[in-house]
Picture 1 (cartoon, one colour):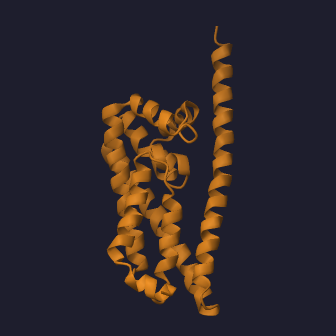
Picture 2 (cartoon, one colour; picture 1 turned 180 degrees about the horizontal axis):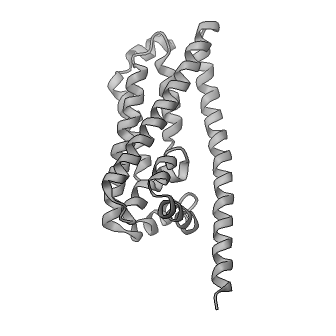
Picture 3 (tube, helix red, strand yellow; picture 1 turned 90 degrees about the vertical axis):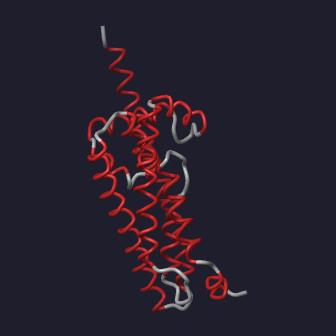
Length: 217
């Protein structure tokens, strides 16, 4: 079976559901490749024989992000700090106490701005909802920042990737699939770079906090 036949055999609902589910579960506090899944689906959608529409890929990611963050907010509000203790034990590499402390600092200081901007940063994308709930952020404010951030993130990535995929496919037959591989690798590399940068910020924050605690009489 060739790629075109394989694509035609896949139910569109399954692909949309996978995009929404992965993005949504990531927003609950579980480290999953939500962004990479969205990039892959957006590229698949521009293939001539794709069974899915680019618009609905973006909508699926948007809905998954909003619902996932809202559920995460509710869980964080009910469980409080104990949620992050449990998540830290389960995912120590991504959600250590230092990571959570820095993310909590950002949400406490920037509020809606952290929720909006957090959609574009892997760690904050994972914990913004639960943290906002744990910190008792007013839900209408959280929902507004969450929805706007989800729309900008899902819509922006979908539009950019689909546009690049269409342009490439017009000039090179089958280029969409090459771009899919490149986009996935590039997404992983970019995520790694952003992760390293974020790790440095976490380390700086942790060091400054320790120094401040030591300096207190």
